[in-house]
Length: 210
Image (cartoon, rainbow, N blue to C red; front, side, top):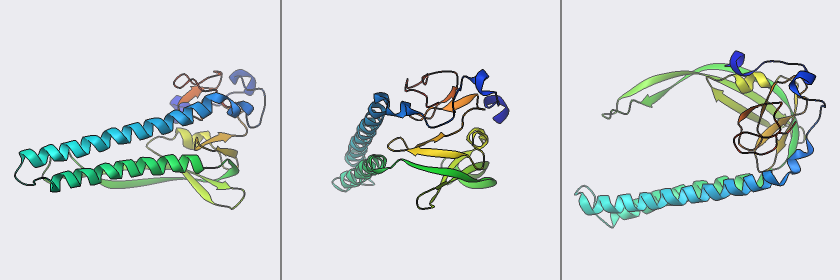
């Protein structure tokens, strides 16, 4: 993945003329993106909750294994879990803070886990994958945060040990301080991989922080 997506280029060729954190983070597009993200999380969770309640109610009315109101109660419980997860995600994003830190370590690990084959009858198989991890230490309290990806080393190679980074509140994304040698950049709103010569993310249209 690295050779396909990441090529080191001189700053002038990549369109980067300065080193530092971008003031474009104050663009209203980011606040609107965060607001829309929370709204869609709530809407999606509500749809899943209604679907779970209706599905179990119908199951209780048509099947003999479980009758209503027991089936309905289970559906309502599952629906409530969907809503709770969405609420926790929204609260977590809203309570997140902007902070500065540095990349302190990177690891590559071969891992495995059991996965269902989808054919039923408790049929499982072992899935092998490579986990790429980048560790960032917050300056203020020394807390370590991990960025991980499976079978994809793009983020792993984008960051180098010692890189200064800034975590942006509500977006839960990182901006690299020195982008002078990069030819790619990750959108701090939606995470899309973009050409650093572009001014806006082609997917969400938020400004690229360069």
